[in-house]
Figure 1 (cartoon, rainbow, N blue to C red):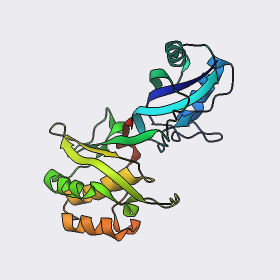
Figure 2 (tube, helix red, strand yellow):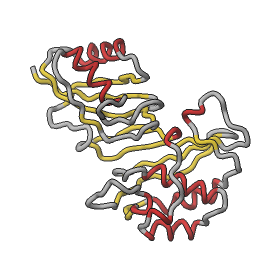
Figure 3 (cartoon, rainbow, N blue to C red):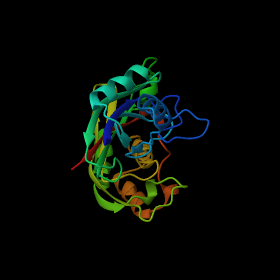
Figure 4 (tube, helix red, strand yellow):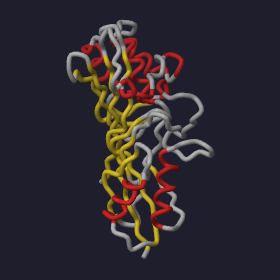
Length: 247
């Protein structure tokens, strides 16, 4: 019996070469496919909702695949979590219609980027935050966040090497929140993302928070459609794919 499965996956991206399967490299997709193929005794190819780069984490990555099996989703989930030797865990496994595709059925994605904003770095949890030792002005950063929202061309925040037919995306939400006295989080939800778009935005927002760029300057960076005008790419370790949204 051919079944289509939807997986919701959590993983610690530290030490991985990203989501996408690559020869001779440790990847999330590659390790999941190995375990699933072993359980189902057939080749399994996952379709992910999108790629995450080396060092990027996920709380709600989504993948889908078809397999000829009578195995129930719950049994498949338990089997993967029991056999997996890496920091990858299935949070859900559901049977879905054959028309479902993890990438093409998605309507939006949400990312969180975490910043530790204090003089001293942390020893515990350092793989999950970007340490910025100088104080950040959240009010200015949120003025810049307001300029990100809406449908517009985000070419200034796209890294080279990933040509697209269009660099226009729709951002539904963008804001910087204070979690506690030391931690900040940038939250963004959009119809889709360009290569390194979130990390390039965060790098530029941090420049704004440090007084290097004002909101007017941020607006001109966005309008320039030129990557060299924006700030440096923030480290991968602070970025989490929070969830992927579907109809």
